[in-house]
Length: 403
Image (cartoon, rainbow, N blue to C red; front, side, top):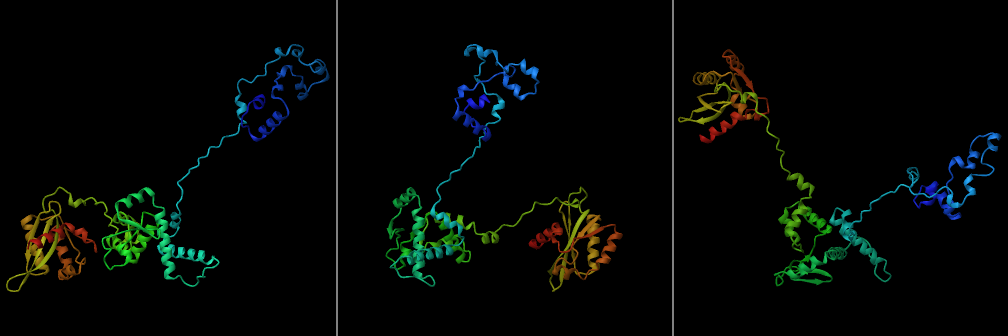
């Protein structure tokens, strides 16, 4: 308690209010500490009988009261005990982040369309005109003059928020002048009969309004590219580092992002086991038909291509027709020359219209039965999955290029 009274600390509300009252009504030096064993006031807080009361110091007080004040118990508070700090008010630390001053033009970021900003500005200017006492009242739809005045107001806002050091830099490097408070540049076409805005374009600095204007021009040109959008803008405006600025703004167009997005390139899958087995050549083979080839005399011929799935070796057999017997003879010749394989992959004959027309005359049930007798495992690629036969289709293309 002495620590609370004699220390000027931000105590909690309950302790702080009572310490304040004690300090206001009394002198803090009058407050002392009396040990409990010699303090008669402790009897009032304890239960005692009459005999204990008669033998206590209740009647005369502690013995050190008869001595000089210098010999009284010391009541100086040298160190504040830890219990006293439990009533200390907690310090709340807050951080206040102060940002840069918001520009007036940043308020236009709430509007996604330049046309909306232009019409809103025109209506604000109309309201300012109509509240004047002697000015004619403007009603009905916005006129061309009001839209033109609103556009000039927006240009003045953009140029007024242009940093002065950058503005002075461009004024020193380009032929510029001010007309009605609007900074313009002088081109080499001043002697031409082109419109005034084309020969003396208005300077548009980097600003949130510029972004809305570029996107508005880009959409009005049916999402044209950077050069077309910049050429349209340059008929009225001059934008420092225009190509870079327009290119950066057009990257934000969601529709263009969707139409120009690149394809997803999945990671290549691991090769199937039949492509990496260490077996003899042509043990695992892919077969396909290529052609027809026009021969002398008006007849036709086809090529039966056999390619090794592991070593990519190629064997070509010529057939004069698409009959089942011709294909079986080509298969027997291939087996006699390269050895009888264990696995044979082919198309299922329905992947493409052209392949279906070419292979529909073959009796695949008979061919598969004969191959079973020859102990050849025949496997068809899945329907509508031509990439399964990529290792023989690529060889067909190479053969056609050479022929």
